[in-house]
Length: 244
Image (cartoon, rainbow, N blue to C red; front, side, top):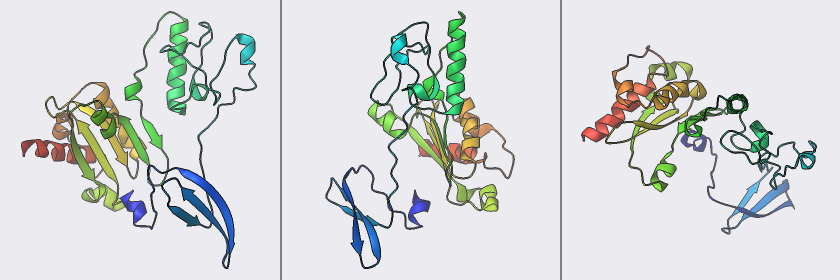
């Protein structure tokens, strides 16, 4: 976000659009968006995203005794069974996260349950990747969730401008954040933004899945120069905070 602000991108977080009109001016047409807070935003163009709607309306679900919510999504249990037990649903038609990687695992879990060898998919350990520039990726809990659940945590940060590899690839604004339990040092969440974020998140995923502690990153030798080295930098940052 800091990198985008340096390019004059303004964020209006927690706002809602009350109205939007196109007005004629001396320089041409201007989009005027009025926010519920009373602020007015002017722009040459407006791009809005309201989420995705699954294409379930032509499946004849009513004939099978199934109904969807207002956005066309089907409700399922932990084994991806719908309200009709022998009918399963996975992927986009059940809503978030609607990613190819998670949809494949959901399908596998549903198939295993069908044939009597069920497994439970750990929803807390699913990685999410946003393939923007810069990339964004995350797994596990975030600070807002930990705060709401009243779970103590400490933060370890690694900034890309501290990494030789990041300087080599021209990304000095990236960031890797580790969230961990200050007493047990167990990793609670990993969040990355920057070059190859969706790739390096899998290192944190492995440690999180195994229930390991932040010391793994401190004691592991990473190839140099690599972006993966950010884990060691972040771990040392977090542990140094505890020492203070």
